[in-house]
Image (tube, rainbow, N blue to C red; front, side):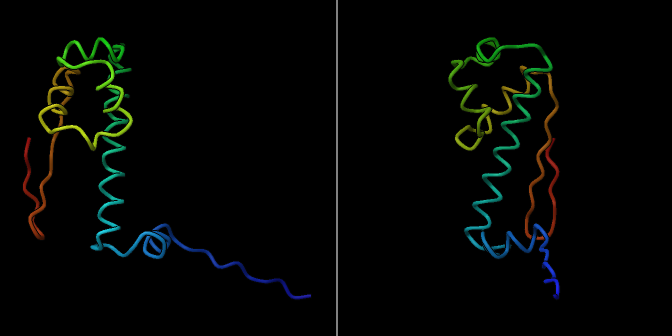
Length: 108
């Protein structure tokens, strides 16, 4: 009896097949949502390292606890200004990279 070989796929191949190729609207939307989710998790982690509650961080930033909670679950509805205020309140350094065509512009 012959055994059937199982084909394996890389994560990149699976994304290409089920989400869309790099550069397509669906893939760009997916990557953006993923980055915003990671950013929210970074905020939560930094807050916890500083031993702050969401309410305490909200007071430092000037927003309600609910906004901190929403930000930690996904940062996609937050403004850059709010995100910068949050990291400043957490005494955390944040750097942005802006890519213009094939060139990166560093912003600190």
